[in-house]
Length: 179
Length: 78
Image 1 (cartoon, rainbow over the protein chains, first blue to last red):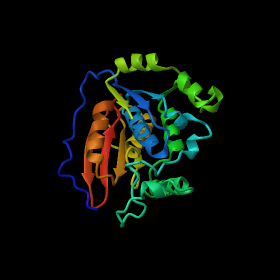
Image 2 (image 1 turned 45 degrees about the vertical axis):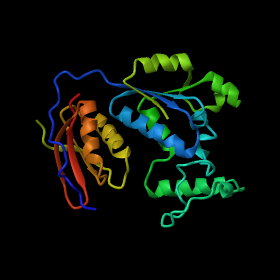
Image 3 (image 1 turned 180 degrees about the horizontal axis):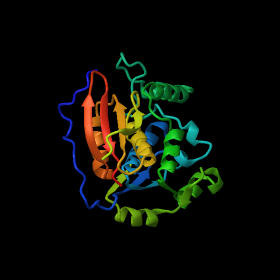
């Protein structure tokens, strides 16, 4: 691949008065391997750009669950984002086949393999970066009760707050995302 | 102004968001006014680096490219 510099913006100056950092409020709505990436990539990028970031996990609680987080899986059933198993053969796994025993673990293995090949950071690595960058993580108490998870099951640094706290933070944020 | 590169980040082979995250880590370790150079092969990096600098308030002072690698020089401003 040849590097193309035609579209590179001109070298820029820096304004004397630097504005307040922006804020990002994120809801993580799914705790699967494929759906853990978009919010964590967005959050760590924003924090690396100096933004103040808060992640609220509702049904995405598993991404801050000590034991489940490193073992997040991807469901091949009813998942329109599930790519075909062989890159050169554009045939998706039919939903009925995807429902067979063992398919979930096969799909998870396959996706982890692709992510490794693409040099993508793992979920535990992204969470470590998030922690390093001072991203605040909140778990919702109601979700904990609904999913039968105790506070001790969560990774260090997770704070507890629910919908009002999210709305308060989101109301004062520049970007709010539900992923 | 210092023109020596104080820190070099080889982010070749790493995909978004890692190049800008590595740049952020490197810039915190140099003094204000010093330069960090980032090497990357991410074709989206030109937009990403400009956006990163605009948001962090650091200054993109130079960029160049050869056959395979984009190089960006960023000065820590704050």
